Amino acid sequence: MELLRSLMFVPGHRPRMVQRALGLGEFTPIGLDVAILDLEDGVPLDEKDRARAAIAAVLGLPSTREGPARYVRVNRDPGARDADLAAVLRPGLEAIVAPKIDQPDEVTSLARDLDEREDSAGMKRGSIRIVASIESARGLLVAHAIAASTERVIALLFGAEDFARDLGLPTEREAEAAELLYARSAVIVSAVATRKSAIDGIWPDVTDAEGLRRDALQGRRLGFSGKSLIHPGQIETVNEVFSPSAAEVSYARRVVHAFEDAQRKGHGAAALEGKLLDQPIVERARRTLEVHHAVSREQGTPPVERPAALEGKRFR
Image (tube, rainbow, N blue to C red; front, side, top):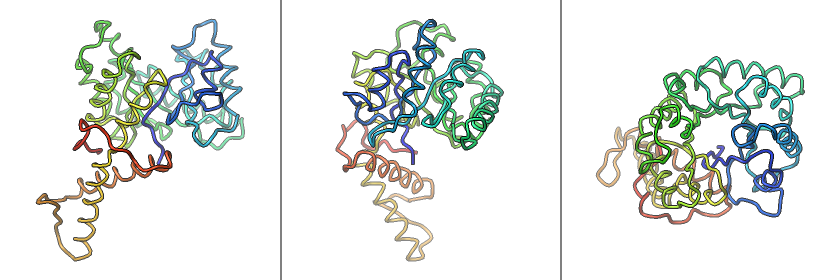
């Protein structure tokens, strides 16, 4: 399975930052799952062309084993987006992050555009996937339809800062972003209902490590599978929070073993430590093990113990 725990925005007009994020420079951000090479908000208007050229130059370069997946966030304006896609749609690009999506037809229009461009570029149709970003009240109300609009959509990303601006919320976040609880939950439900991933928004204060951890923990408990971020220093915490702990893996293995043992014996029900194991519990346990195996393959090492704050908090 593809890991979508940590997704870092990287300004496209900063070539050294782009190369480093992709593991092509002298510094490699260990463990980053996805580099979102940005052509939108992170790039000044007069730097857009430079950013397009810088991203196009690195997309075709071979990635290292540790290198992250390569996504590009394009602009929402049709003219700017057309220029973005003309520059970056080439082998090496894995997904487009579509910002500020308000209606499903915006995604289907992008998908049709990708169909034509992939054909022209000799690429397999459907190879470029889409992450749709929900950043407004309008978008939230139709998030399910956006997620279901095309098979290219693999995830919904919650754009917390723009969403807060749309609602007219204060500049400074409240504790654990409590004021965004409903919106975050709605994005998760919409994504999961269509069997897509749900990616949480950024934690904007790169100096507040504890705030990041609390926010990421809340996101995982709500059901997000990963979190977007803006600084390499946030990667380790985000990956830790969105990876199963050793205790979770151990419990999941016992659940699956007890269930399969009961099935082999022809029992109609299974139990573990006095608790009935129904199908949803077993499926969640298998999901935990699937994520664990993906993390282990990525790291090449067994999982490490994690803080007690996450013990007992299990994946869907």
